Image (tube, rainbow over the protein chains, first blue to last red):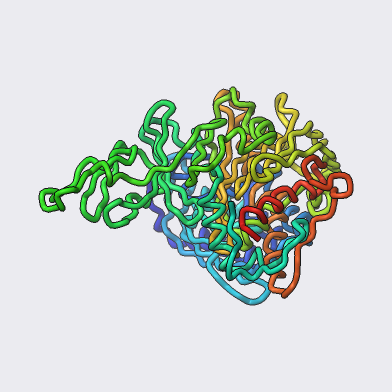
Length: 162
Length: 389
């Protein structure tokens, strides 16, 4: 692992993370999907599962087809019955490094707050992303985004990816 | 056996198919439930064998409001203890899981073996003459291993476990692979539902085709399987031939709803007070529940595979478990939404929950259909009795 210090590259990584959070905070699932590479995967799990080496967490989209299906879940399938909330992502870059295989590995802390229809807000989850980022046609994309929640027991059911 | 309740908000509850809202919201009702149900004559799950694969593995869990330590003390031996030092009541461990052959309380270094026997006490020479270590072990609960699940009870009067589950034992066994195949742990989805534990448990098959858009999008009709409500407290179990889902092109990755191998049946079980055991398609899911007061319920969805699964099937099980039937599941996220919307509406004075569908043909609810709600009523009949209401 070689830590990345190039400010230009770090700015591009930050812009990708911001675009990701921006899309989720506006429930723009197409915008969320656009942050992933064509071979992209997404996972939401708890630090507890990770520590125990257990593969099943809260969400697992391990291919682009599943990422596209998740857009459908949110926009079409669940839309009428779930109690929607507004998400608010606060991100903080932790570390960016070149992995041994030449890919860019990024660790980013997150806290996600939610506000319900009554206007009451609380913390949904705190944790960190472990991401693999690739350059696809001149734009950075997530080849893999893994959201690891320190929050093993969220205070309500989670509808949208974190 | 059950003295009438005093100082509860329920005065004239006569019909166990119509449930007053107050039973889902009232603090005094909740306190009495802890005493008569959670610490009463019920077997409640505290661990899956698969969670503690090796000798000296332990986990902690809360039953009712009592923190417990569950240890594997031998090949087929387990101990279930209250997680409180016999000396001054300190929690012995705060970890969810670990491995330990003994436990030492950090406060005054009282040391216990993993069966809860007190082994070492500093400064014992200055204790009263009659002090005897044998009387200062951790409180042990009666426990029994049944279908690769460890069940415990606080009450000496709890009937034998086969009797406790009655005819529902068959569908519990079916959900857990029939009893012959070893289970293996895949992971946890833990969640809080903002509803009373009984709202979470009132769920049934009547809503499946009506609420779940996923089934409609997939043109999935489900089935009308026979359902049995039986055992000591009106447990609810359905074991049925599950119709396979057919890819209709809606999902880009239809493997989410595919059934692999020869697992042709589904089993859904609601076990009183607050446990659910479900096998649907290839997802095997054991749900430990826990009330957090009258208006919140914590559920630990625990996913399993068979230890002898070939690699492709194991991978399929992992992928299906993560996205299909959990609190954020493609099919089941709407259940959690309904639980919370029911709870929010329950502030209305004099309101009640009504169970109707299926009672025409099954007035006692003992045998009904999976997509009815009559199967909930034997539980409520029992609840009324055990609560003395």
